[in-house]
Length: 214
Image (cartoon, rainbow, N blue to C red; front, side, top):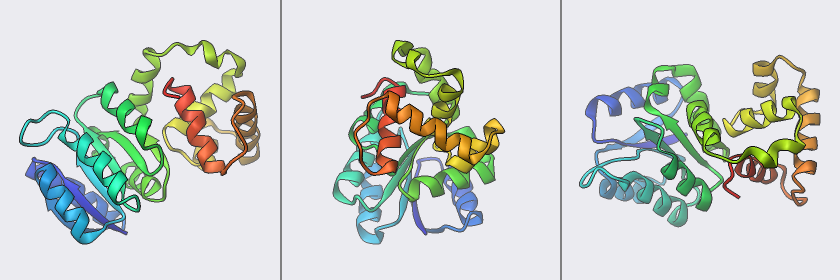
C-alpha cells in the first residue's frame, strides 16, 4: 500500500515514514503543509494519508480541513490524523462527516511500531480507528445513559470496537473467544436498534452512538 505523510516536523516525518515502511507501506511523498498534502494526494492517489492536525500556516486545524477535502475529493484515500494531545473537537468533526477509512491517533503511538502499523493498515482497509486515550477522553465528556441497555462486557467490547480492533483483536485483548465477541457485537447492534446494512457500516454506527456522535 502507498502512503503520503504530512507534518511540519522533519523528525516526525522521518519517524512515521520509517515505521510505515517497516509495516510494508511504500511512502510516496512527505510534505510539511496542507497545500502540499493536497497536491501530493492528487498526484499520487495513495491508499492512505497520515496527517498532522496542526500545520502551517496557522497551526490550528489545517490538517483536519485537508483530511475532509481528501475524503470528499479522493474517497479511495483513507486518512489518519495525528495529534500531540487529545483534541476532542477535531476527532468529533472528522467522524461526524467521514466515518469510514478514518483514524485519529496520538503521536506518541508512533513509537509502538507494531500497533501503529496495524492501526494504519486497518484504516487503509476502511475501518474507523481511534486512539485508546482519545476514546477515554471522549467518554469522560459524554452522557452514558444511552449505554445502560448494555451489559458491562458489551460495553467493553464496544469500547474496543471504537479503538478499531477486529473481532480477533477484541477477543485477544479481552481474553474471550471469537464466537463470544461476535455474540456480543450482534447483541449491541440489536439493542441499539441499528438498521440492517453492511456489517462494517453498522459497527461504525454503533461506535458513533457509543461516543455520543450520532
